[in-house]
Length: 459
Image (cartoon, rainbow, N blue to C red; front, side):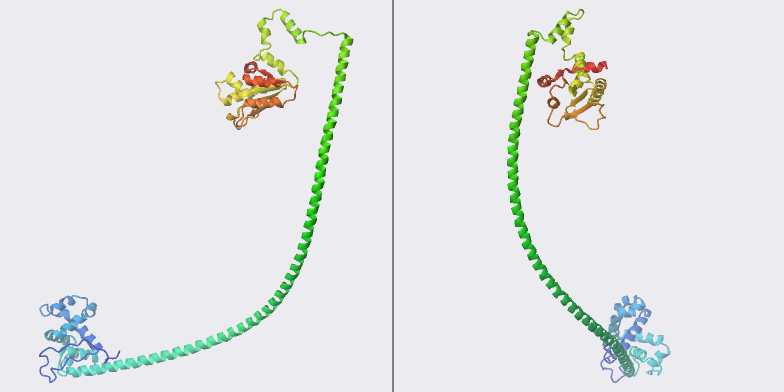
């Protein structure tokens, strides 16, 4: 912005100021912007030196500002007071003339030293208002405008030089970019040639792949036909095999019938043989003259036991007592005897004061001794409701069983009895009446729990 374009705040001329000038009624001149700023700066610097009674009330607050803030923040208030209060401006001008020394005195005399700053001269002249102060302002304005114009021209020259430098730089960059574009174009052309070659090769491979696909499709159709024929043949073979299977099943049924008939014939021959043996035994009885007898051998043994002195009647009754340990020993002395024990039925009668674990351990240990003495097979059965894990190993020839969930030890004992072959001596120890009756019907010897308890206590 040139000095002629800068518009300062118009400071109206106070009434009666410069009454001796012919142009005393002329309007305030327009100050160049540098002059206006300098006027405000000089007034702001001088303001704190005024006595309080000479300082306008509106500027007392501004006077307390720091020097670097006074002209910046209070500039408008100072300029307004300078325009509105001629006496205030006169006081400021007097102090400015005094503070600026020789330059102030020369300006107050209406002269402008050649070496002085025109802006400083114009600011002092505006405040002091000597004779010819308007001419001093005009000369300062011309000088400021000349400086502004020179600065503008210098700026234009610098801008032109900068634009020229930028243009030269842009031309260099353009040359570099053009070289890059030419190289890029060459590379693109080379890549285009490669892509064309790859496209030609790919097209050839695609045609070959299509031809191979057609051949594979033809081969697949052929194989599907073969597979269909093979499936048809397979189904026919399955039908033939099913027919043969039906024939084999019919032959097997015929063979079973034949085997059944042969079994019947064998049974008839065996019956005839046994009938022959029976008739031979009858003939042998007639030949030996043996007549029927009313007593059995056991009756003779019972009679001899009754005639033997020193054997009371109570002893003969205990011989058949199911709680007699002697009877138990007699049964266990039979060949291949099998002792089956109702576990908790025995332990709760013999040693109920112990815990269940101690009861099981004592019973199993005692049965191990019996098995070792007799060599018989021993099985002890407990109810599964109290099944335990981690039992110690059972003694030799002693089997420990627990009934399954939902079953009882009684049922498991009956299953063991039914599983044994007819004729094998089975001894079942239990005081449960139902158990005793059930095993007796299957040929076993029931014994009471007390017989085993006494046998175990005897050692």
